[in-house]
Amino acid sequence: MMKPGEYRIHYQVTELPDAECINKAILEQYHALRDDPTLKRSHYFAGRYENIYVPEQRLPSLEPVLRAAVKGAASFLQRPEQGLSVGFWMNEMGPGHVTLPHTHDDDDELLSAVYYVSVPGDSGELILRQGGTCTTVTPWEGVFVFFAPDVVHEVSENKSNETRLSIGMNFGVR
Image 1 (spheres, helix red, strand yellow):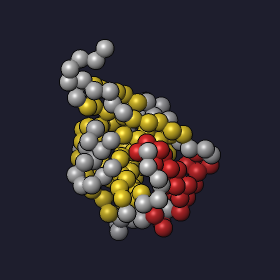
Image 2: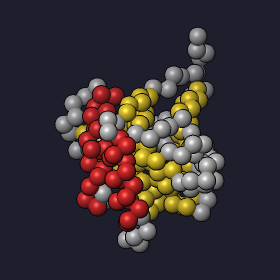
Image 3: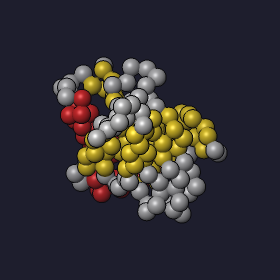
């Protein structure tokens, strides 16, 4: 039984079919352009930019991920896919990096999500907090995690010797 003031964090986990092939293509394209100085970067913390914005046309391999993301968001929100828009950014977490607690409810977001492209073992967990409840999700390659934009979330330390790559997303109405 839940105590007053406690919440159940509503989130949804879905897998992308053929993720291995899609993720390989995303990694190849992303690595070829990630050091481009014209890419927008934001949220500079602890020696790294948490968000790297790559235009969709420069990452064509991302198309099936974004299509599946909109479908998953529509399912989570119980609304039609038509009219939903998705904004995204890359999140590259090297060894020792963390993502600090934050929310995505600054504007008119309806939903937030993360998709995992490359997940070395022990490279950090997604921690969701709302009210007095904390939920930890151990990610794997090819999985989406959808959650409300007002849920405080963070990523624990990447204790591996490799870089983890994920794609953060927000959904809104066109």
